[in-house]
Image 1: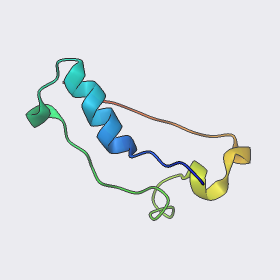
Image 2: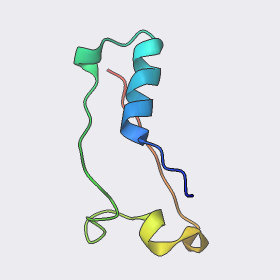
Image 3: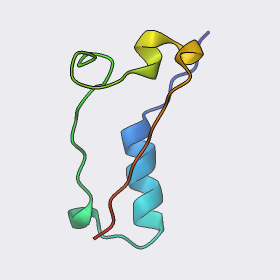
Image 4: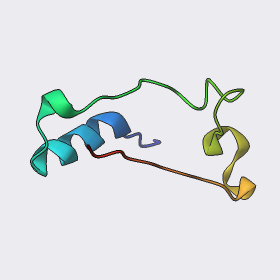
Length: 59
């Protein structure tokens, strides 16, 4: 059995628990795996690619 996690939902819950109102949280819905022609995808290229980047903007 392979485990999976809903990262957008987990991130949203952590932000809400940190005091950020749900109305101030926006998820782009972009899948880097499916949009690999536009965005780098470590999942598509594998961990041997040596690159990964995550960003959060707080306003």
